[in-house]
Image 1: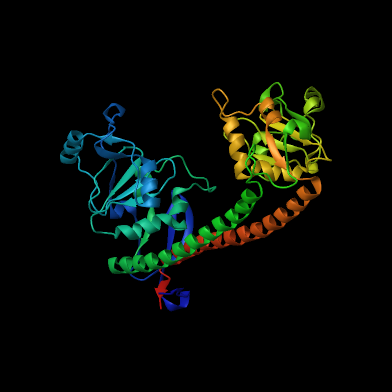
Image 2: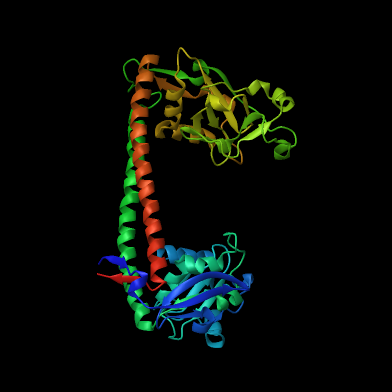
Length: 443
């Protein structure tokens, strides 16, 4: 099936204005027999009877919050954490009712406006205030409404005027949310087209994601192959020597956070490198901090130089590693980042960066990092005693050239696949926009 879009001249239109509050949000043209209705016109909209925290169980009938609805919407299943007792479920079912097939559950907190259409065989209860319950009564095809919630048309009503998502999507707001509605048979036809189109797009995106993963793994696999020899084993490459980082460097050390913390940072001055700036193979200047001359003098012992290797030594990003570029000099590091300064006649900085980010050595670093007390941490002593196997400098530089060439190729492939993935997401948006303007057809 191929999707195409009718032009404005091919269908008769009714001109309608959509207003939210007192503001005219948008002007739309709808085909004849379409109506602009509210969700309150189409569904009985409510929520659940309150279940108190002390009634939560570790087994029984699944009890969903907004996060579970999001997972159901994305994956079609959820590994549930919370339950209520069979007795409570039976009581609430008899007194207040429970979601039935084709009812729509909509998130009212967190990621707003995410839908899940209840299926035959579903058996659950849900948290009031977190989830809005759209009870189906046959006035609208639930799958059509589910697609509508993914469209910019409804998203603009869920989002505020500056494009930022508001804090909650309430029952009142849901009742007043407007939706273009064609006859029921046309709703079903549109859903059928969207299902087929989206299935094709999802398949193409899945292939693109796999190709992107393959491109990344190509470089990482080659990197692992280069640095796969075990330290301390007899299986050593000819000409490669095993040494500690202390033997191969002129400096290893981390700094501190200036007194006053973040409040003491300035808008420009001397760069202060933090762990958030250090990523594998790349230095990122996002949220790079700056300090003044007085603060920098207190950290003079951790003054950075071009081509210093940076290693994160604490926290969730422990063992991330990159080479520091000269563009951000003068600079210092804080206590979460260690400087490793190779002896230029023995160790190439980029070679060391590639080595420390390879899977064999990364695993050894992470093992050391797990020896910290309450957080992952790598001490100066552990870095100094960390042993690596290296070839002579000319061979290091040759390996670097080969790996950088491969890295450049894989990065270009990654960029192509990332753009293709983004294009597929935009295609979905475009199809949805046409669908809810009555401009979607098939050939």
